[in-house]
Image (tube, rainbow, N blue to C red; front, side, top):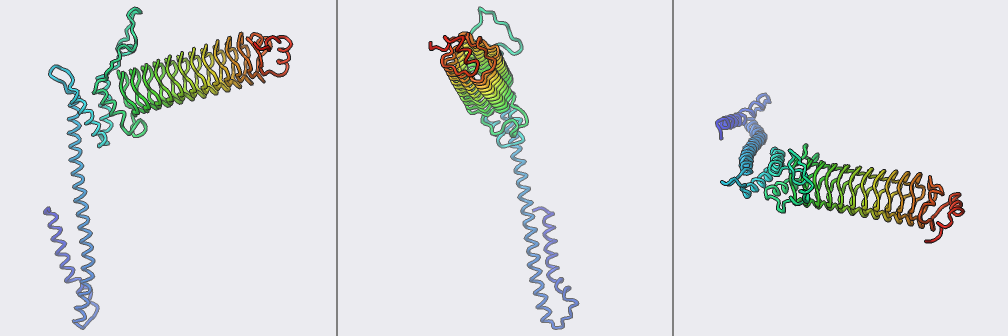
Length: 459
């Protein structure tokens, strides 16, 4: 108890005693009570009431004093805690640079420092973002981008044809423990960009081949020119991530969320994206040859001039997707939803579009040479100037399509529905392989029967 507190307490006792003795006398001074006994009784009653009042005042003062002491203790505890966190933070930072006498990393100490920083980030809001910046800087410094097929980012060398090797040959089978530890910490944090974090995690220009980041939270992360070849990113959260020009060859992205992400000019050859969500993603110029895209959600995505040669897009959702000039040579789009998709001048040669929905799709100038469109729904599609030579359109719904100047040479149209089709003169249809059981109407049907009856016969 301090000197000041003792003085206040002494003053309160003196004031209390003085009030009990003299205040009742002062209150009854002008009342005019002559009887001494009655006067003493009234004074005692007043003293009793005054004792209750002053007692509650003292209780209040005591509570106030206790509250102040508790608050002061809490403040002191917080200051001590902050001091401990600062000390732990400094120690963890020093651990990140631990090396042996021969210059090799002391991985066990570095990994300990990484997890120590994670604990600090969880405890202290003040240190949270500095920890994130330190950990991402550690990855950028210790796992820098090597460029396509192992080249450095400073100078992309031209590799002679005779010395070119498999672009995946330099992928390390083992991820350094310290790098994996950092990515594990980053991947399991609760906050994300625009959801508690004002800035993006910066993992741009990093070499992260083979990392394991299943279910990782990397929403909004900056992954420009990063190397994720053969990485495991199953069910990872990558919405709004910026990964332009990054490498994802043979990466497992099954059921990952890349909604509204940017992967322009990225390389996803032979990657697996089954059931992944790429709604409204930006994939223009992206390489997706041989990728497994079964059941993928690409609604509203921009795939202009993307290379999807040989990809598996069975039952993919591509409603409203932009595929202008895309390469879909030999792609499997069986049962895919391409309603309203923009496929102008796309290369769909030998593509499989069985039972696919192409309702109101834009296919002007598209190359559908030898494509399989059996049972496909092309109602209202725009096929002007499209190349449909040798295409298989048996039982396809071509109602209300625009086939102006489309090339139907040797096309297979058995059982197709061409009712209300536009821009389809009889001479154009006469180039088809067969028109057996084709649904026609009006003058066009009459003219075909009169001039090309052999086309209506069963092959």
